[in-house]
Length: 282
Image (tube, rainbow, N blue to C red; front, side, top):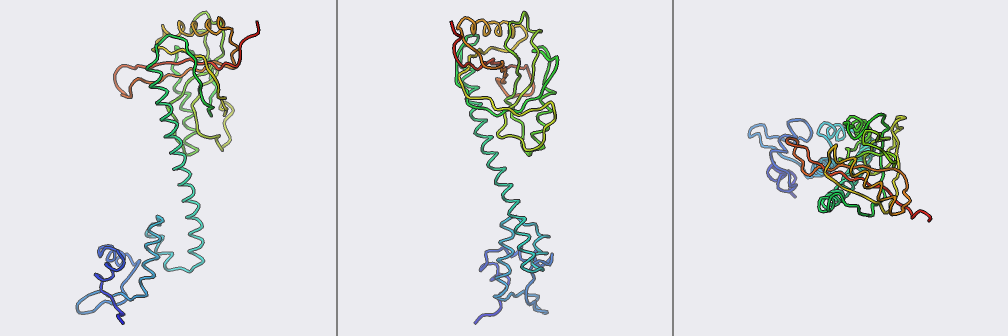
């Protein structure tokens, strides 16, 4: 019965490159059982196959080489403790992948909405159903459509990134539905972004989580400009009154870029939408 195997045989029988076996020897992770003092040929025993399988297993689950060496030189209790920790790490990775998949689905849905929005006739009242949304919103003061609210969004981005996520570029503003006389009278109550789940951390006083219900929304879309904003807001407000609709809650404003180039002229389509519940009693 064969008892010693050359490095080439070890490589072939265990599907491990010769260069890898030599590197493992160099760092003291896995050494040959015998090295011929004259020829310098390396030989391994069949029992070493078992230990090489452990190394292959640890490599498969993403164990760093320095950790492998400690485990190989330790006892089963140490390996059990290590695997316990690895299991937690892998579960966290799985959760992150699941969250990434959810973000992709949400983003695809938003891009579909954006395509539909761009294909609509602008400046015309329409209704559409919007699914339930989880949002994170930050309170703001004295911010109007004439201002740049992006710095407030950075507060939301900071919270989301601390939770291990990334901010969605589908964000906007919330304000009361009123009969404003001009756009500078419109003061945003909050800025918001959509998120995939309720944050686990304790939120600052000016940041809140909210579930926006699914429902039919009355909407208007237009090319964003200071001049257009009040004109189309007024059209939306008057249409709600003429249609005898009972609005539920505030106005949601969202602006979506027509392209993604960071240079050149800014070009956005803005949609204002208001959730409706029923018609006003006559």
